[in-house]
Image (tube, rainbow, N blue to C red; front, side):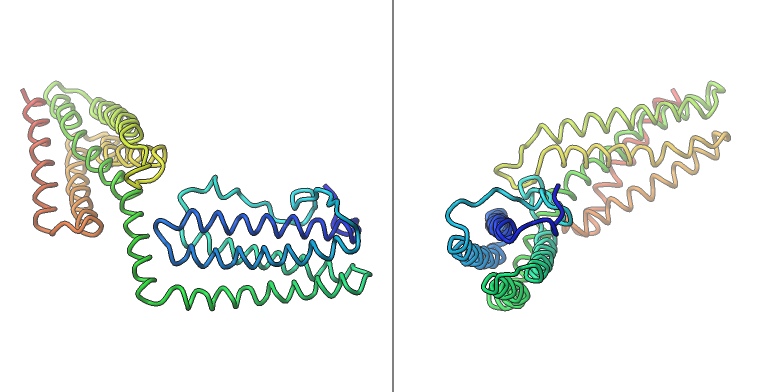
Length: 322
């Protein structure tokens, strides 16, 4: 990597042209990634893309006047001091907060670059251009705010907030809730069957703990793969299948581990009492999540979750006591 101070005026202009081209394409990627769910914000970034294209045109005209047609390929990653950015295509799906914070960081970095470059420029016309672009980058933030006020009135902001909440529910809450319900409910039968069988046969607390741990991990792996392979998200908008699979698998394991951990207590009867308390808390938490994010009525959400949990719990007791 080269130090910034070692660059000539020609190389500084070449770097500025490449940077403006990159920023323009980044804003275009933002607009493309947001257009389906956040069309107004996508239009905002289209405007910023046009601004960057205009900056690049001015830089190129001045470069051609001073140094000719050939522009050496110099990029940010070739010069020390620039922030390394993750490519947009690696951070899908895009979120509003992510792109706005990224845009703010880009404008700040670019403005500082132009100010430093203007200090080192000896050609008056180049220094003037770089100073103008530094001020343009400062004004770019104001322009973005103006565009935001124009393109994102309160009703549009409300629509985009609703869309963001919908995506969060589809991509995180739904697979997580499915996993939590499966892990909390499906592992009840083997765990408490092992607990009551251990009590009847004089076994220690390790038997139900091992059964519960195996059931939790096995269910997590199974649910994770099932969720990841069920839908690639291309039509439903539910996000990347691997992300959903990981969320679902982890929440499934967590749901089972919760009432398995009490069996680390050496006293089997005390461990079972604590595990039952944990189960009650888990079922209440699932009911709340269903009510909060899935808009299920409190009564129906509670009845559905508790009824299923009780039936599975009684199945485990009957099998373990037989």
